[in-house]
Length: 137
Image (cartoon, rainbow, N blue to C red; front, side, top):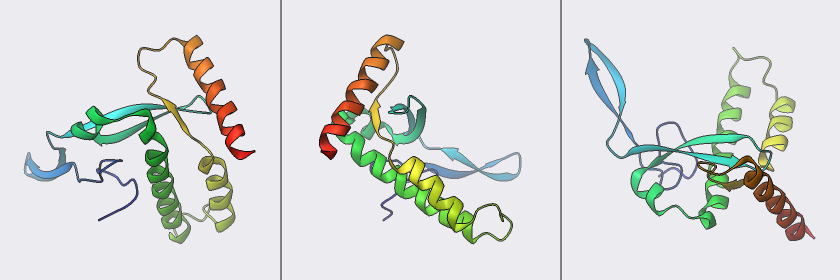
């Protein structure tokens, strides 16, 4: 079983949420009935959409966010390893990978932004960053 975020898999339980179907004579990937997505607000105020199964989405709590982010970062780590190894992507060097991962590894999930005002989002991001600093001290 995988332990990182991967295309087509649930970010939390890692179940595979795609299936192969025939469409106009070609094999294509289609979403299963359990496929869903969730938008998450990161502490740099960017938003990230992740694939998540309906069961995990229904049960998702704020306490799960650090685990989700660990999974996503592990997925980014794997993907950037593949880019560095790809001879057709010469711009992806070990140095570029390190810089990219250093920037992105420190991100954290603040909340689900749907239905929250910009003012409230700002307050939550500020509190998240303050709490993050307290944990480091």
